[in-house]
Image (cartoon, rainbow over all chains, first blue to last red; front, side, top):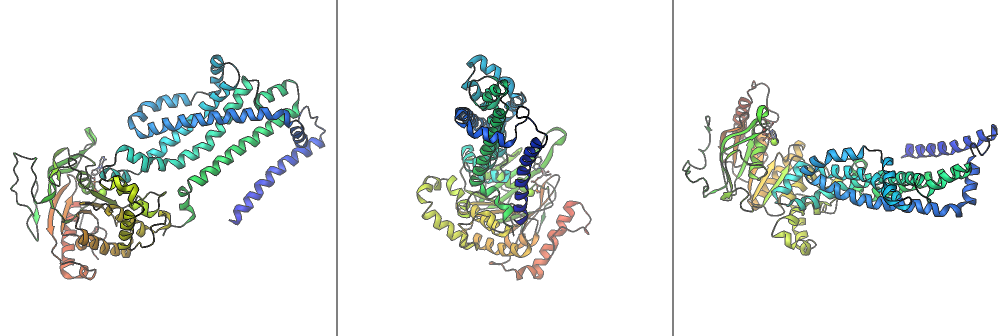
Length: 257
Length: 300
Ligand SMILES: Nc1ncnc2c1ncn2[C@@H]1O[C@H](COP(=O)(O)OP(=O)(O)O)[C@@H](O)[C@H]1O
Ligand SMILES: [Mg+2]
C-alpha cells in the first residue's frame, strides 16, 4: 500500500515536471509562441477562448459517445452470437479479422461519399473503431466457461439459453467491461480523425482551422482538451469496470486457504 | 471380455440379459452399461477409452471406480450423465435409454467450479433454478422454502452461516463442501462424483468422507464415485470396480461388506488393509508398472 502511494506521487511529479520543464525551456531559449507555446500560454488560451471552443468540445463528445453506444451494442450482439455458437465462430472469424485489419481511417472517405461531411461520418467512424475489441472480448469471455461447469449444467438438462444466461454472460462481464475502456478510447480517436478530415465542427476540425491560420496556441489548447477528454473517458470506464466486476479481482486481495 | 477376477461376491446381476431385446434393461439396475465401447478421436489418433464394458448398478447403491489415470473412469461418468454417447453398446438410466427420461443428476468434480459472482447460497441453489419441478417455483420460493432447504443442507456439511459469503472468502475444503451441496440440493436420484476430494489435504478429506457417508445414508441416491484413493473407496463404497487402461475395462468388481456407519478407525483394521493391498496390486498390475512404483495414497 505504501509503495503504491509512493508510485502515485512519483507519477504525479513526473507529469508536473514535464510541464515545468517545457515552460522553463521555452523561456530559456525564447521560443516564440508561433513555434511552441508555453503550457501557461496554452492554459490561458484555453480559458479565454473556452466559450468559442465549447460547441466543438460538445460535438466531439457527442459523436464519440453516440458512436460508442451504437458500436458497443452491435459488438455485444455479434460477440454473444460468436461466443455462443462454435459454428458462427468458425465461419465469421476470418471475416472479422479481415475487417479489423483495415486501417479504420480509410473508411472515412467512404462515409463522406455516402453521408457528406459532418456529424454522421464522425459517429460512424467512432462506431466501427470500437466494435472489434468488444466482439473479441465478449466472445472470449463466453468461451472461458469451465468445461466441468458446463457438464454440471448439462446434466441438469439446462438449455443452451440457461447456460448462456446463468453462466456465460456473467462470466463474460469482466471481459466486456475491460473492453469498454479500450473501446471508448478508440471511438474518441475515430471521431476526432473523422472531424479532422471531413467536418465543420468538433475539436479535430477546430485544430485544423487553427493550424491553417497559424493560431498555434489554439492548436495546443485543442490538444490539451483532447488529452483531458481521453483520460476522463478512460477513467470513467475503468471506474465502472472496477465497480461492476469486483468479484473478478477479489481473489488477489484475499488469500485462499 | 478378459478375465474377471471375482472376490467377495460374484457379479451382482446374473447374466440373464436378453440380447434380442436390448431396449429392456434389468429391472433392479438403476444404471446399466451394456457392452459399451467409447472411442475418442479418429484416424491415427483414435483412443479406445472404454472397451465393451458392462456395468450394472442397483438403485441406491454406492459404487467406486478406481484405476490408473486414463482408464476411462471419467468416461463412464460422462456416459451415465449423457454428456457423451457410446460408440457402441447401450447405456440405461432408470430403466430407459440414457437421456430419454429426465433423471435428476448431481455432479461434483475435483475443482469446485462455483460461480464467483454468486453468494454460496445462490451457488448451491443454481440447480433449483434449472431443474423441473423446482424451476417453475424458483422465483416465488427462493427467499423462503428453497432458502431454508439450502441452509439446512449447508448446515449438514458444516457450512452453517456461510450462505451469504462469496466463494473467494472460503477455503478449498469449504468450497468443496459447497460444491457437494450444489450437487445434492435438487435431491438427485443419481450422484456422479469425479475425484471430488482429490485436491484436499488428508484431514479435510477424511472429514468430508464422513459427511459424504452421512449424506448418502440419509438420502440414498445412487452414487458413482471416481477416486484415486483406495481408503476413500473402501470407506465410502458398497462396491469397488477396478479398471485398467488401453483398452479401458473393468477387471475386478468387489462388494464391500463393512457395516455402516463406517469409522476412520475401521480403515486401519487388518481386513480393510488387506482389501486395500489387494486392490492396489490389481491397479499396479493394470498399469503394467513394477510393483515398487506404488500408486499414490495406496496404503495408509
Ligand atoms: N475428449 C477427449 N478426446 C480425446 N481423448 C480423450 C478425451 N477424453 C478422454 N480421452 C482419452 O480417453 C481415455 C480415458 O479418459 P478418462 O475417462 O478421462 O480417464 P480417467 O478419468 O480414468 O483418467 C484417456 O486415454 C484419455 O486420454
Ligand atoms: Mg478422470
